[in-house]
Image (cartoon, rainbow, N blue to C red; front, side):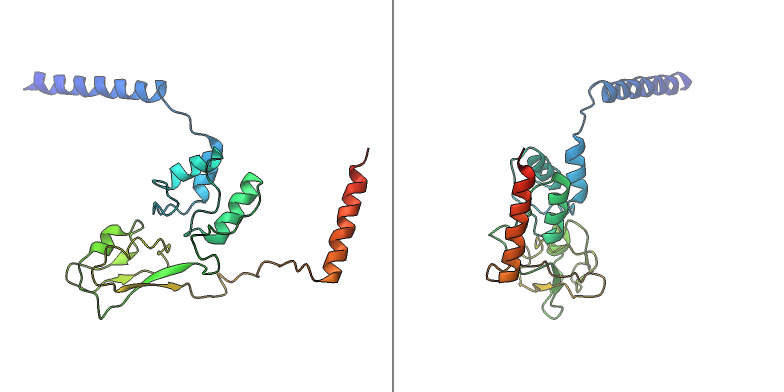
Length: 201
């Protein structure tokens, strides 16, 4: 009996040592740029960007294979953050999405919900509460607006509504340059002239 226990401990120690050495010898170094991009992404793993998850999308952005405007849950704030990180131009939300819609959250019409739990299984961030054959509800503060819960619902009792604007999420609208504004036109013309003069040797 004792010899069997000792043999089991020896085997466990041996395989643990092998796995530890393998993790060191075959460690794959992650790109720091990819890690920084991935940290900004919402981690909903919703696939709306056409990639399998947030990390593959981060890798594609870092490799220059994907633009920074394919993440609806991240919205304009994410686009701005990625543009600042990568020092690239700020893009509008992808044309397939409604750029003016703003962030949204899911709401379950409780009178219609049949408690099938399909939306709970589809939610990547566990933002839906409920049980089988019981009414479900969405935790608004946890919902990322990925819309993955819409398709599985057999009774179409889930709607996407705009996030309520509060003092915590309100932002100044981005300034819009009006080409017909003569004063603005003069300022930009003067600035271009000054930059051109300074660029001369």
